[in-house]
Image 1: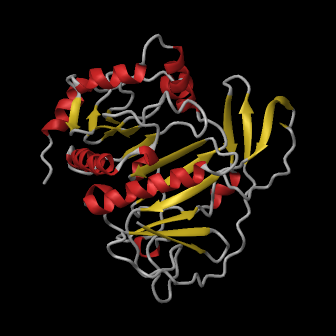
Image 2 (image 1 turned 180 degrees about the vertical axis):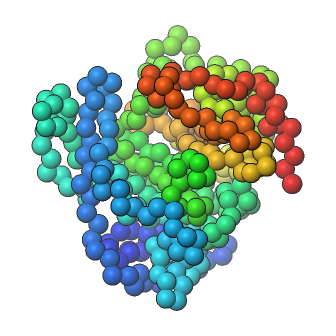
Length: 359
């Protein structure tokens, strides 16, 4: 893999990742006249829940569902420069222009929120990156093919290592939102990576659970699910299964057979094997109904500095679609109390996904 670092017109970093079998010179300049990025995000502490909330009101002005011929993630072409100056690319990563968290964030914030002495304030420090999987606007991840998907896995691993090395970053979260129903504002195939200055709630809860348990919860879950009725796809290195207590109508979790803390720890064989299983299951998601299923793919990695020996890397893939023309909305119980009520049966979902014929 070849990584080339350049700068956009407003100073943001852009990184081109190319397969080393097909080296390309990346010299195009960003010709746009862009004002400097100014980020005023804050982190506010919820004293009752013990969680941090990012306040990022500047994101209201971000690009929202532009026409396909005005997509800012397409390659640049004569007369229409985009976020990516090159006329073609393989995989690209760049700093988000409308980030929730940024390393250059305004640091001068008061100690607490107005009138709330328990609501500690911190600068919205961190980093938010956009990952473009391909320069083809209408191609989904499920259609990338194994070589490009493997390059994306290598990019995720590279960014995890780089972002985790930033002083003050405690957790690195690569993810993809796919489909307008999920809330995607740009239809070009892409994902994001958030580098948080704290351990986010899901990871913190999991870490607390495995530490309080009598046995090895991760190992017990992986071992039991690999032998259970909810396996959707597997090979020697990975198992993809519908979790027994799935929260989402369609949910699959991917666990490597061998325990590793994060993406950089995966060897070549494990990365190749993940691509095989992941593209298989994505294809099943894409063809379960007449129209492709919207989804979120979320990597659950070990924190940067804490609990690394206890963690087991895994990926969540889930959809809010519960039937051909029905979506799962987070209503009172889910949104108000965080108590999920699932409209589907995990064993049935696994059977349905196994039965999908991918063209």
